[in-house]
Image (cartoon, rainbow over all chains, first blue to last red; front, side, top):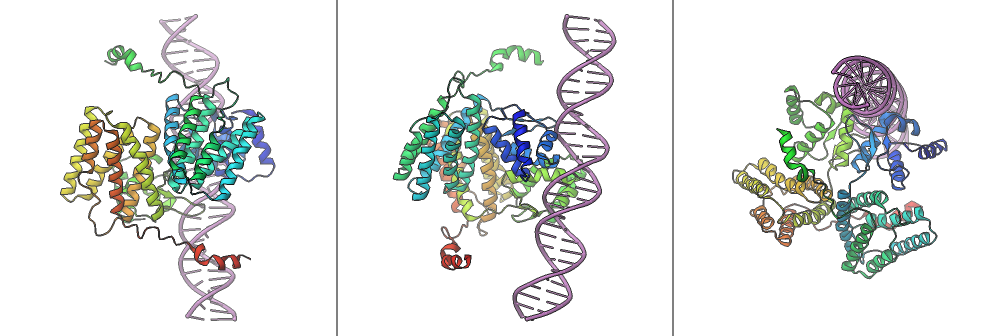
Length: 245
Length: 245
DNA sequence: TCGTGATGGTTTGTATACATTCCTTATTCT
DNA sequence: AGAATAAGGAATGTATACAAACCATCACGA
């Protein structure tokens, strides 16, 4: 487990924060999002318990919750680890999010009150500014805030909850597969365009804006050759069959 | 907790089944689906533990998993209960499922191998037969099998997992809001029509078949007047504001 | 009669002990 | 040298004990 993170959390605890499994879930989730806990990191129950000052019971609950949220891999008799989704799953996650967020955006078009819209505008502007200053962590925070707000304002709360989950998962894989050469996964104008469509009540436009945005994002990632399809069975099929006998 | 269910489970345990939290999840889920555990049923940890012959640790894990699956309501310091989704949430769940299953069906059109298709045909036929015989529990089982198979064959596994969840949730609310006058929520020909479109590679047709099927199902439910909207704030708004001061 | 407050039983929250599994390392044999 | 194996440490699985919260009931008073 990353040491810098451990120290950070210990400091927060000393500061008198009160802890429960939900807090742990929130903290781990955030740490994963901000890459302080890279995929594959081991999360032993006792260590987490010591860090947060609680017993394994609480940690176990938090870990099962995180597993349900697809943040952590929890396999029987093995240490929980931060999940590292495959390239394949990454593509599928993006596709699912395009579908769901597109629908949510379409439902939301023309339905948002002026106050929410202005808050969204402010967040988009804050994102642009953070990007201009090269403050990538802050930019990510702002960007997430926008999408999270869309999810929580979704008229369909079931879809909204699904979107919350998908936003989290895409953020994780973006952090995981970001091209190292790129300083930022920022697509200028995407968010303002989306907000304009929402304000104008242009449902089709809002959906399109979301789809374009997510396609653009996905293309910024290093997902290797389209479908490497390391199909071992196709390659070693014959041999495998023989050995099987 | 329903007594018939308790006895049934106890019998299964005596029969030498081995138990873990996953087994409990599966059993409770199934019992909810088949209405042996109606919404609102209390699920105290100790009782469940005694029934399944395990301690509260295991039961607690199972309950948190069930809560993540939206099957159970788990609130702090209160006994877990079988969830009873509102009318509002029911509509939203159906809308979400139309979106997701429609997409999965479209993706699946023309992609299924002959064997899977014939299995699906057989299941649809078994469903029709169960309905003809008036065996509703069996019919439900068959119907679920079809949709579950679509979910697990989804080329996009993320969407597939989401669909699995939504199929479960719609089944629960169907059981909850079924018009008492109806013996069955069966729409003749819907499944065969869907399978035909899948076989023909007709993506648009498959999506339409799903959407029609789910709309038909939703209309069989007793969801009350469109949006009763018991908006207390709208009614008592002034008074509430005064009292607030 | 109705509201209010106390009280005992029930249920969950948390910590901890012990059993089991797993993984690593060191050792031995070929 | 390399592979198989055995032992030790590390981590999870499960059960249980105790504390805290909740709920229903009953008694009391206006």
